Length: 256
Image 1: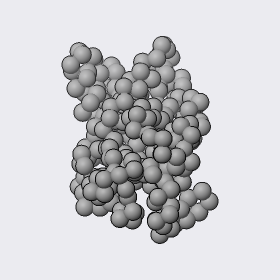
Image 2: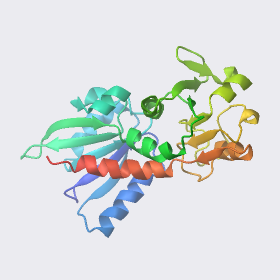
Image 3: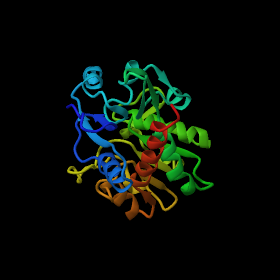
Image 4: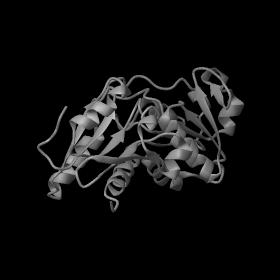
């Protein structure tokens, strides 16, 4: 999809792409602030189409990256900032062009770290010493990185057990009591599949638990609802997304 009617184009790559918070947010921002720019969703079924997308859209200045390409896009980039390199996942790409408009550098960043940290840090209590991170994708890496920086012990949870991760079947009452922060980084429960949720033993959730869902559509996911019914503090990913968007805009507009 070529978009040459604007001199500054930003966008989102992923697959599949349905409703996009980023597209709505940035296009409203551009209109409200009279910025000559457009934000476009680029749905590419394989990351191998990424170079062709760059060639076809010569006014691209920056991209966001979502599922399933936060890790797969890295080999196509020239450089990573320190945070993205530590996390091993990228969700913002800054496109630096020379005077002729040719791509000079593709640099990857991770604003998931900024957004997640700033949206959860005030909810962490003294008894929150350990966290379960549901899922093992790119977003889970950023969440794990944040918790490590905050001094929490972290375990990923997946369908199968492995080194450094538990299976859902291994979540015993003792583990649920020990790990009082739980973050869903999976797409389970996202619209339109609102009747789905991660398969954790919700009966062992307590009011001391903090249960955070990276999803934001719907506002209250089934995961959040089940946790709230047990008295847990819950939060969705909308504030994280807003903070990510602010961070992405700042990254794209660094002095070139």
